[in-house]
Image (cartoon, rainbow, N blue to C red):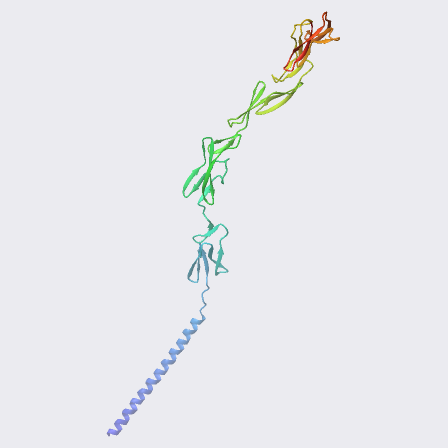
Length: 313
């Protein structure tokens, strides 16, 4: 064979191999594209998982994230919550007298607290301020009362009202005690003062008498009768007694008969020719007119203003 023929045959062999390789490459490419298309179709058709909202304490878990209820400032709370399986963030203002603290609204803590509610003298209280305690107490008969003012410790010493004493850090009211002592009633109000209620004469015919009934004082009216009267000096009802300063119906001696509060002085009558002589008989007042031989005269007796008393001179 000549060289030309050999070269021609070699070129043909090379071209045949390239055509075969191209065909294989083409078939391989078609298969890969088909497989890729099938894979892409499977990913698109897979459903997307639903988002779930859950709460735990002051935390909310949503879409892989954690949201915490927290204080934006001292008065506003940012609250995280779930609603219809969705995350909801809401700003809430704390109420009056409250503050936002550690993710919640709370009452503003007091620095000063008084267990008896304040300036209360009838209850023993303990005041707490800045960690220290102060209890109401008695001092020299008075009450030292603690109380809060503008959220700070305050207080002072006060006197218990009448009819009460300071006992164990409070003013205690005690009922009065009534004691009957003869012609008067003693009312002791446990304050160191004593009230004496003395019997007295409303008039000569009536005595006002005090007496005790339990621990209360009462009064009654005691009337006099024909043979009694109310003695102003003794403040009591006494029996009337008949007394005669001249000792009887003695016309030559001036005298005055007394019966209760009444007085009967001897006196000149008949133009000073006789004397009317008063005397006592059987406890009663009697009188008789007696003639005077030398006439009747007057003496001045009785009180400082003088009472004319007759006698036979």
